[in-house]
Image 1: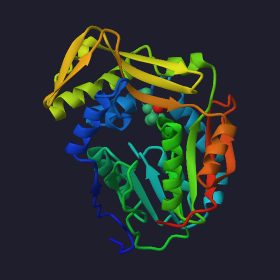
Image 2 (image 1 turned 90 degrees about the vertical axis):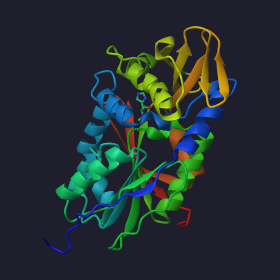
Image 3 (image 1 turned 45 degrees about the vertical axis):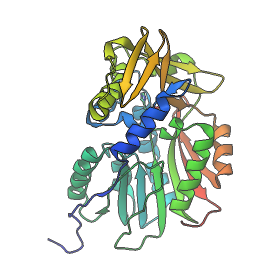
Length: 329
Ligand code: AVJ
């Protein structure tokens, strides 16, 4: 085998431990509006269910984003330039990045960052086989807290963070700005961010996307309780909770909740958590942006929007942002 080929895969493991999970679940369920962090959706089963969501007719995001990527890939790789170190946040099954990897000019390394360790290692190995000249450096981490970026063997001309799928929409406005600032520090001066941003549109379209006929989104939402039962030895009765998702136009976001269908008490450690009939756990927000709103938010984090690509219905956008301010961490 050629010495320039990289096939040995090692995982940098910084994923949040069980104690962190337990603490976040407990503090969320103690709030007056109960809530759970959406990042915990993605255990093995949750990642599988999300994969199924991405094949649904109603869930327009993945196919719309793919059409935009494929339609403008040449222009994108020109902007990114040669010898990029590409960091992907929430790499999942690493399907989206392949278009980029296929077209980039001599990319130096690919750093997939994901909270789902099992899947991450599996797909990183597969990618390394498919792209033998690319150094693949997977990091298992909760990217909302800071983690060490691995050092590539070859020097890169530019660090580019790839953050597709509109996952930025999961953050409330202030955390979203903080997160963009964190990305700016990761990519450094001259670095860039290629990001998928879902746009405001007909609420009926949004409603359908999070209330699919087959109930896959409902199963995805409820799986969070199953995971908590299993990993934290808790006693949620899943049949007494119901998926409820709606678009809140005032806040510009989809809200996903799990609504208690009766009065009930759930036990976690020594805590007894009481639910009234109709009371909900807020499990996810998914913000939708206007192009102006997003540009303003990006600017507060030191990013300048250089290019925006959209589909012909203007449902989704991919944006190329350059860091104009911050030094590397
Ligand atoms: C992966 C966060 C972009 O908010 O649309 C899909 C997750 N939740 N269906 C989204 C999700 C319900 C998704 N993101």
